[in-house]
Image 1 (spheres, each protein chain N blue to C red):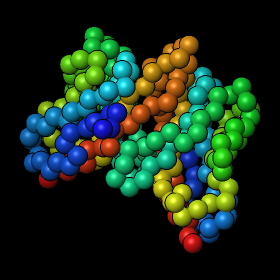
Image 2 (tube, one colour):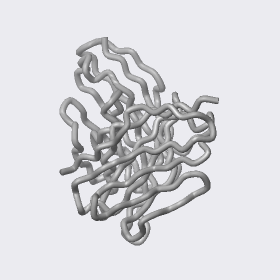
Image 3 (cartoon, rainbow over the protein chains, first blue to last red):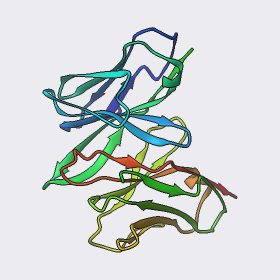
Length: 115
Length: 113
């Protein structure tokens, strides 16, 4: 089983619909992230969380919201989907060692198409 | 100042050749520079990473060269193989910043047999 699991893997939705992307992890990491990948733009950070009480906006948070239901679960919601939110979405986790940044582990991704 | 600029956008290399991907950054607070490899349909996976206290790190056929004064770092893939064909992302982050990764735009590498 994958350490970072995203559901669904693919989703097509209509403009204006609410949609939730889910992420769960078994790595025991405190930090969780949602990134968006677009061709030619790399990955951009949407939201990040240090624990269930800590939610922070990333570079491109407009139009998105998140919920950290437990240490292992971090969900991303599009309240009213629009076509330019069509992208590949990744959840990631990471840990720290002695205050230093370490490897981030990514899920398999969710390909979202808004029509 | 938060940007990481990556080049080239795409790269074609013959089997056995050297693949070189370059990245440049502005924020001198960055202190962690990873490279991620992504295959189609998969999430990015860490390939190799460097911290600014060293100028080079090698792991097998993969080497990061780091130039702190020029604020540049590069990935060298020696003896490139068709199995190395993937998209490569450089990234940067700084301690105390929740390990928020700032990614380059990516380089699509194709290694031809």
